[in-house]
Amino acid sequence: MPALTDPLDDAQLALLKVMAEPFLKDGQWPFWHYVEGMMDQLGFDDAEGVLKSLPKVGGSQSSGLVGPWYGLAWYDRVHLADDSRPALTAAAGLHSPELRHFFGDNFVSVLQYLVKHQRNVRLSPNQSDPTYITSEDFKRDHPAVTDEFVAALPGVFEHEPVLRRGYQPWGMNPGGWRFQLHKWLKDYRNIDDLPGYVARVVEVTEAAINSQLPASPLPAPSPIFGSSGGVLATHGGIAAGVLSAGLPTVTGAIIPRTVLPPEEPPQYVDEDLIKELETKQGHTRLSPDKLLQLMRELNACFRGGHAYACHALVRAIIDHVPPILGQKSFQAAASNYAWPTEADRKYAKKLLEFKNQADDVMHRQIRTSRGVITMHDVPLRAYINALLRVCIDQL
Image (cartoon, rainbow, N blue to C red; front, side, top):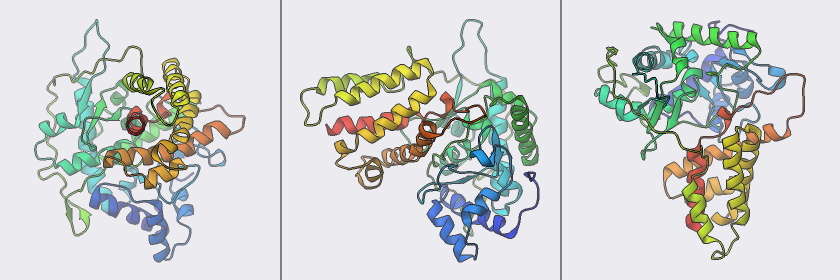
C-alpha cells in the first residue's frame, strides 16, 4: 500500500488539479460527471480507476474500503454517480500546488483554533452538556475571514476524521455550521503544519486498524454528502488569500460556552412535525398513516441506537414520499421538484446520495469481517426533517 506522501503519477496529479480548481473557485467539490469529462479531455479515459488508485491508509479494497481508512480523496465506495461529489482531503494538499495554501495554512489554523478552545472549555462537576463553536463565533473571533471561506469549511469538515466527528449544519444560513469541541480533538494538539496533521491522522488510523475496532473519531466509509456553497476569493482562477489577513494565532483565552441542551428523549424526526402530520389525518388526498408510523419507528430506533434499522427506515421514508411531491421516484423529486429553498434542494440531493449507503447496509451479505456501520453514519437529522417539512406543507 503506497504511503500518503509517495509521489503521484501524471494521471493522479491531473485528477487533483481537475477537482481542486472548482472547489477553490466556488467552495464546492465538482460533480463526478465534470471530473470524468475533464479527465477524458486531458487524455485519461479511466478517471474512476485514477481516483481509486490514490494512496490511502487502511480499508480493504476487496470488501469496498471497509474499516477505518483515510486517503487523498473521499468518494462513494458503492457507485460513483454522475451527480455525486467526490472530495479531496487535506492530505491532497501535500501533492497539489493549488490546495497547498488552503490546507497548509488556513486549514491548520482552523484546526488549531478548535483544539485550543477545546482545551480551555470550562468544566463543571455537575454538567456534561456538549460545548460548541459556531460559524458565528468563528467569524466574530476572526473578523478578517471572508464569509465565503467560513461557508466553504463544511466541505472540508465532512471529509476529515476528527472534524467530521464534530461538525453539524447550524442556523438559518445554508453555509452555517457548529462544531462540538469533543474530546478527540486532543489527539491533534501540537500540530503546526500540514505534514504533521497528515502524519497524526495516519497514526490514529493505523491504531484503529491494529485494534480491529473503528476508532470513535474516524468516520466509517460512507457516500460523500457534498459540501456547502460559497465563493472563495480568487486570483487567476485559484484561491489565494481567502483570509484577507490570515488567521491570527489563538491566544487560548477561555471563550463563552455555546451550549445547546440535549433533547429528552433524543429525537431524529422533529416531534412537532409528527404532531402536525397527525392533525392532517383524514383531511388529505393521500393517506399519511404509513408515513407517520415510519417516522415514529425511526425515532424509536434512533433512541435505541439501532443503526441498521435507522438506515432502513430513512431509506423507506425517502422512497415513500415522492407522490406527495408529484414525482414517481425520489431521484426524480431531488432533480425536478421546485424545492422552496436552495438548502432544501441540497438536503434532498444528500438524501439521494445516502440511498447507495442504505442499499449497502440492507443488501451486503454476511462475510468473515465485522460490520462497521454505527449511528454516526446515519444522515444528519436536518436533511430528513427538511424533507418532511416540505412534504407536510404539500399534503
